[in-house]
Amino acid sequence: MTTTHVDAKKPRSLCFEDAPTTVMAWACGSCATVYPMRSYPNAYEIARTCCNPVCTKCDGETAQGNALCAACRKNAEATKEAVRFERARKIPLDDYQGDYLNFEDATFDVDALDDAQSDRVKRNEEPMTYAWACAPEEASFDVVSSVADMLEEEHPQGSDADVDYNLLDAAQILVDKAIDKVVSHRSRSDIAVLLPPFEAGAPSAGHDAAGGSGT
Ligand SMILES: [Zn+2]
Ligand SMILES: [Zn+2]
Image (cartoon, rainbow, N blue to C red; front, side):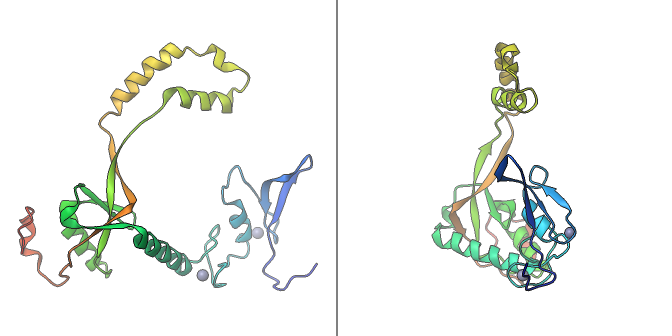
C-alpha cells in the first residue's frame, strides 16, 4: 500500500457481501470507527475527517464532517451567490410587489429593510445592495401519503389493507383547517431586488417614519 501522507488515510467503504456495490457505511481509515449511511447522510466526510479533519481545498483544518474549512466554504458560497445573482432577473425595490426579502438565509419584512441594513453595519458587514425576492408558501401536509410512508417503513407487510381511508380523508380536512393560516416566505432564486444605497453613517432619527418618506 502506498500512502503519500501519513495522516491522509482514506475512508474505507463497507458493503454487505451479497451487495458489493451498495455502500452501507464508511469507516475512518485511521481508527476504523464506522459511520453508517443510514445515520450519517454525509458518512464519507465524517469518516474522512474523523482522525484527520483537513479541508479538501486548502489542507487547512476543518470541522468533522465538513469537506471544506470555514474560509473555503465561505468562498464557495460567495461564488455560488455571484452566479445566482448573475442569472437572476433584477428589479428595483420600487417595482417589487412582495412583502418579504431574503439575504444570506435571513428573511425580513420589506418595511424593516433599514433595520436589517443597520444591523449589518453594526456587525461590520457591508450593507446589502440587493436581496432575494420571496414568494409566500402555504403549509401543506398530505395525510394519506404520510401514513403510507409510515406503514411502508414500519409495517411493510400489506398493512395498508387495514387502513380506514375514509377516516384519513376526514383527518385531512381537519389538518388543512388546522394549518390554514400558516404561510412562510421562501426566497426565490430567480428574482433579485436591487436596493437603494444605504447611508451607513446616517443617524436613524427618521426611524419612526416607516411610511417611506424618510429622506
Ligand atoms: Zn478515526
Ligand atoms: Zn479550506
